Length: 159
Image (cartoon, rainbow, N blue to C red; front, top):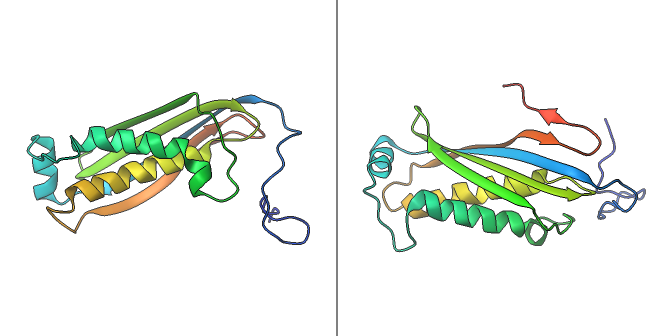
C-alpha cells in the first residue's frame, strides 16, 4: 500500500507540497448517475417540471460549475485552482438515470480530479433538490472518476 499523500511523516494531516512538481495540463472527467422514478423522468423529459430556480438540468449545470470552482473551500487540503475549463453535460439514459459528465482542466502542478468529482456531485444534488417535491425515491447512485490525464500518471476506468 502506498503512503497517503495528505499525511506527513508524523501521520498528521497536511496539504501536499506541489512546489517541486512540473506545471502540466491536467484533465479530469467524473460522472454521477441520478436515478429518477419513472413518473419524474417522464415529466422531466416532457419539459413539464417548472421551478422558480429555472430549468432543472440547466440549473444543475450552473451549480456544478460553481461548485467545481469552489472545491478548495469545500474539501480540506485541496489546492485553490483557477480552472481553465469546466464543462458539464447532462442527459437521460435508458435506465431513467440522469447521466452527469463533468470535465475539468487546468495547467497546474496538481490534478483536478476533486474539482470534476465535486462538479458532478453538486449537479446531482441540485437535480435531487429541484425534483424532490415530486418524489423522495430519487437516488444519487454513483459518482466516480472516469479518466484523468497529466501529472505523474494517467487513469482511465475500464468499465
